[in-house]
Length: 494
Image 1 (spheres, rainbow, N blue to C red):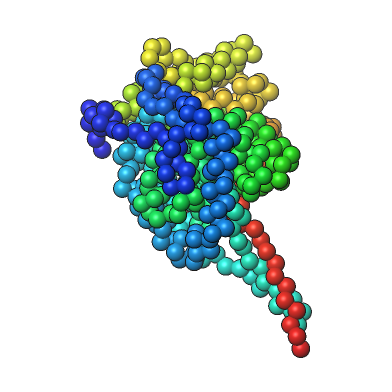
Image 2 (tube, helix red, strand yellow):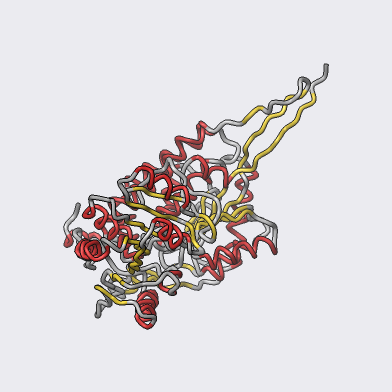
């Protein structure tokens, strides 16, 4: 790992590609408009990117459809796509430091996290689906004697991947991996707040041998470029990670146009339940803090609601407050930093506004708050005496804010945990095997963790119940989102 001084030198020498990537080439927006990219840790303008709009999207979709029909990618053998995507993943690994720097400059997250987790995780996602795609089989149906019926899966066509700013490349790769492996043409639309690593992928795609038009990057605002993709009649599927509000809007756009598939991983307000019988409270406290404050709390599955049994509440809060100290914000270029800046000052004000709202409703701030000065920095915030009906407990804050709610009984804990419009993740801490199974079965969440928070790998699906979305990222199940299932029924002649 480089020192802070070496990372700063690396940043200063970095030449940032700032154009969209269409049909194998970098280019400006048709209308020539641009957006400023601001480093949230320093408030400095670090780049300008194209403000792509409907005309740019029309071109990207045209190139994507043309590539899909020509079939150099879509009709190639799975073993060929596997080899190309393995090269793509290797190139991501080979450019880890540059991609990590772009992520940190864009989002304000610690460089140590970008290097150790985000970029390797992105490469691993591409690699995992490359390895998987030639192991996905069809089926033969158990039909009558004179019929041969088989079920096959074929690429859906043109996929738009619309991804957020908290883990730009990593979450993008969760879409790119299965969509490209299945043979689709993919248009990646990153957030206007975090487009630099996606742009960089363009040249890596060319080096890996992905044909022109098969992978493209369109930058710009969601209400312009994103909306144009959502309403385009020649886009077959949108894979989205972001807010529940936008997920609902994408479904409306699909219904009003061509009924394109919409796979949305949306918001979360996740319950982390600590029972009185769990013995290793230090471990639970450390993972509670990490589960809420990692990545500045800008995580859809963050452990933002701490449900703790009343008999251990005070001692456990003290342990969590102590564990939160390792997440005091520092310069993201400092390799020892465990918390950087929020995505921008506007979001910082939104996060702090929720804290004020909680206090107005009777909750008590135990620690944390604003960091004045340059950059969008906030200390880890723990709010006590929260009622689950409060807005701070029901709405996704998307920042380093932990809401503490006490409970008396197991059933009360389950009721509080499920009293949410979201159902993305949940965790419970208990040494009672019967309780573990009883509670886990009743929690309304796509992922339930027992005696850990947010562990997992590419082998397990990720997604939510209720208003946390539909479909699943990761695992073999994700490939299903990007394929059509076809039945072929053959009547055999006697």
